[in-house]
Image (tube, rainbow, N blue to C red; front, side, top):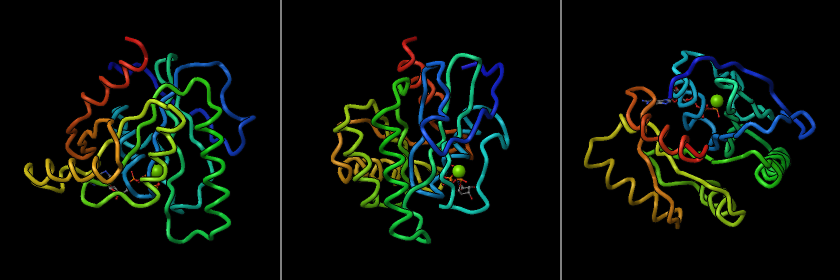
Length: 193
Ligand code: GTP
Ligand code: MG
């Protein structure tokens, strides 16, 4: 994918703030610190377009990025951050659910899990929720550069088994660029081209 232009568009805390022009949208979902912003920056070939929160887990915003005037990335706030209260957590899950349930232009959800760890209960729950909503989803296992090639293969199988999922798990590294072209293929396919 050739990135001609991309810009941070807005951070939304409420559905009324979501962009309304209907451009196809791709959402990045995962635990805090899993590497969402890094992946977004890597895909777009920008060093620091995606905002890295100084206050992890506290961000309630969905950050929208507009690319080539033809599609959008949505960086969803990270879940599973230990420092948030139960009430914050449930508020946050509700907002995310509203987005996943109601967002019409949402074409594909890219769910991130850390390749070095077993998916958390939150990861499994989010994944099952996506499947039950009938959302198109792909799982990417981040930070693949941290494992040897043979460990990567074992880990991918473990992740797929743990998530109880038929969807592919793609290893990526934002640091090394591994898997980025493959991920673009999935995104382009979901765009219908
Ligand atoms: P929140 O916005 O807090 O939810 O985090 P995030 O999911 O956006 O994660 P972020 O991209 O900020 O990355 C978190 C940490 O992981 C940073 O220290 C990154 O440098 C590191 N990281 C991200 N991707 C990779 C990767 O591919 N390889 C390695 N080795 N480190 C990575
Ligand atoms: Mg981030």
